[in-house]
Image (cartoon, rainbow, N blue to C red; front, side, top):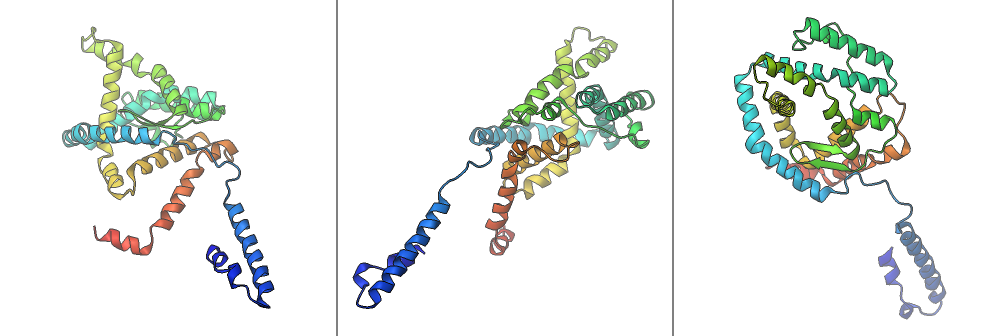
Length: 296
């Protein structure tokens, strides 16, 4: 339309065609004005959930470097030495330790039935599953819950806040990070670990150090379990940072709203960018581009 607007000049108006050309120019100018008016920013769009992306990407790159040169090699060695059944048992053990806080969060979210199942799972796995190393509750199809204090804050209406990449700890939102602080203080790790160190005659080891050690063991074991999955996601992702961010935000959103018919408008807007990004990305990658990617 702009090209058509420029084609019509007053110098070209001649004789009887002058009036028609002038009318056409007015119509085209009106159309151009409407188009420009439509392009003018109107109401503000949804909030950007990642306003600190530049800093987050640098921290993400740092975490990836630590993983590549420290955590992944250690996890690979752990996976080679420790049998799969033992890795699964450790994972079950740590999940069982979280059940008391899951129980509390189910109550705080108004889910008494889920809280009752938490108690049944804790007792079943602790008594009949060798302290939680064997997941007896799942074998008997006892429902499992996965609540935390970050989800509880979300259910209470606390906004998620910006996306945040934490050094060595990975992705959070401000809300989930605050919930994790509460979780760390309330978790049974700190209260359970001294028992094991007393048995080993290591009474001088502080509770904090023992708790950190157990968390490090949990992380190492979990990293070993998902060695292949994480490597595949790295290789397949168009932008691994965006992949991790979107996967995390979508996962948190699903967990927070698991008992609601639909999220609030404000909360829904926080994840609007994910759909927009996916649509834009699909549109940018044409069939020709996909053929080019196959060459690499």
